[in-house]
Image (cartoon, rainbow, N blue to C red; front, side, top):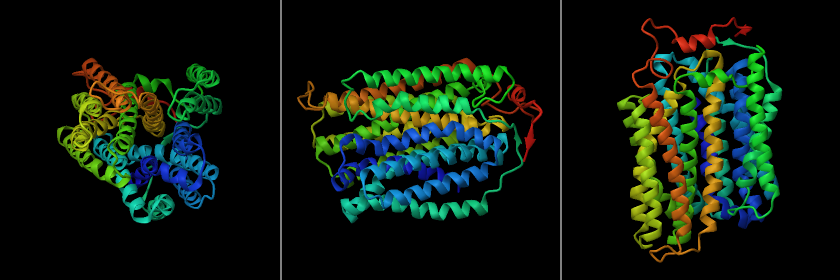
Length: 485
């Protein structure tokens, strides 16, 4: 049930991209308003994650999970029946809040239900399902749109979410039993405000740029203000921690082995995966002339490849460090090759070349993503488990928003520029090279982290030989809890 609920939040990111032209044709609205249907959800999701993680570490996670899931389902109903584009955007933002509330509790509950030595497999399963969902959602959307038509089809995409949610939430209420947890009371409202506002201001101007760089100064000033607020948030959290109060994010988390590197790698991986998939989806339609359904079907093998990658991760070892570095490296090379193909391969052969290379990229990502998530979160401290989970999700959602926006800017800026091969495809070629570069950065971080910690046993590797908490974890949890449930 936890994995199913998590998959619904990713389904709502991936399925709608293929339906945006139909939504605009049916409801009107300028391109910026239509783009907000994607961006508003992602930003609300990202801004809610970390505060929701802290709430889950203070209140029962099961209760917060069910609250978020219920909000998500109700908002999906509102989206399905929305009469205007503006109300659809509002519904998407509320959906994002619901997703942001439930997702940290999924990771926190997994960490509480499973002992440290057994967490790697469920965490890897969760990451694999999320990856497959993000790749398979466009296929589902294409089938529904083709069968029902544009005007009804996009509404049915939300109905699918509602039906699945109405099945998942009651079952989760019955089946999820949260073990007793050590908790630390207190909520850093000032930190939550600085983080939420900083994220929205820093990411929104580029994300809502409709595929081109802003030509006025104010969006850049807004982004700069957001970055200043995020810097102020970091300083604020350090000050709160030094005072002995409970911060929203305990800076000590980033001293744990693999945690900081794993969060960063996850952000770069999702920026590349989301941006790359979006560019391939659009380019196959605009350059090759495929229909939405044809495009989705051509991309289906990549979903299968990601499953194979997840299976490889389970066989090699769910927290295997080299697997993260190798998987991201393979994915980056394949994405760069896809960009080269759009610039030099004839249009009639492009789908065959793209599907082969995208499958290779998905194979690498399918192996690396579960291993990285399990390696990052496997030994998160009990009273920080939801916040730790929310941080990796925050990196993923923020990375997705930045990856989509940046890739679209490059794509549309250079779309009409011919390549040396003579095709008007410099846009997808350069955009895919950009996202390949992002994934390569994630691979470098993973490699350096593995080399730095090679041979060490501790957080993210294994419990100590006596079966207790590793020393670094003990330093975080060796405090008297204020309350427990």
